[in-house]
Image (cartoon, rainbow, N blue to C red; front, side, top):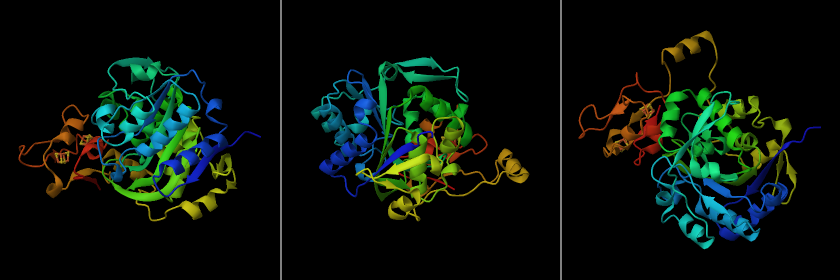
Length: 380
Ligand code: SF4
Ligand code: SF4
């Protein structure tokens, strides 16, 4: 019988360092130990979610204590070549982590924070959606990646977790350009699956002690989910996240395409969920014990019939971003983040007014909503 994908579910109510350290050690042991995944001489790149500079309590970025506890374990296990980096949506790695506490952990464990400086084109002929990627040189020089994602909602892909965290492998401005190349949720998800298959992170960890619901991934609301999740299968991991928030895992494009393209599985019968002491728990029991039915996430099913296809082609009933004028400080970050060359959001009425959308140009990538520092951009 083929082996099931293991998802380790670590219940955890607080960001308490010793508790997280001990849980992560147990979780890693249940995956066979770090040494079964990563050789001692390998250069490890830790990849947290560092979307933008934000207070830790807002649940925008991976919590520093989770990163710190993992770093401590790696150091204690004798790993000497570790660095940390992300291709942040706004700012550099060192600027985004400055003052969050993550910088202090990196200093304590002698782990450099890398600001990506040089792009390299990497071809991937076997890709189904994407045949090449522009990656940071520093990433291509690492032997392996550990992904440390944050459990959050996402306007385009419904949720962002393990698979989506890998979009931070793409170099700088190329991330915005990627949205114009892969504008639909499906094409974007397939590209992400190709990217994960190419880079092949060895381990995926997800910080869901406090998750983000609602207007994620940059402007939603923090909500306790009280779990850390771990797996070597990012699709299984994301499917567990989806189930815990009562979202059909097959409705998440990265799960759907991830399974079809052989990255992993979202199927219940192919997943084994283990608690920290190694006890197996059924998915239904895990959802009963740790799930949150009122978690604010898009659970709508899109029926694929002639009418919905026509409506999609005509741009009818599509989600769209809009600006809540009273929250807008006219900083222009949304305009700068818009990847459409002619700008689908711009100061069309002058810089003393909030920017205005041109929905005919808008590709619904929601970069503007992700980046707005004032939660002024909503999606309806
Ligand atoms: S990023 Fe937000 S606050 Fe800044 S101009 Fe755009 S809507 Fe206004
Ligand atoms: S306006 Fe916003 S959602 Fe539309 S293309 Fe620009 S960044 Fe993307």
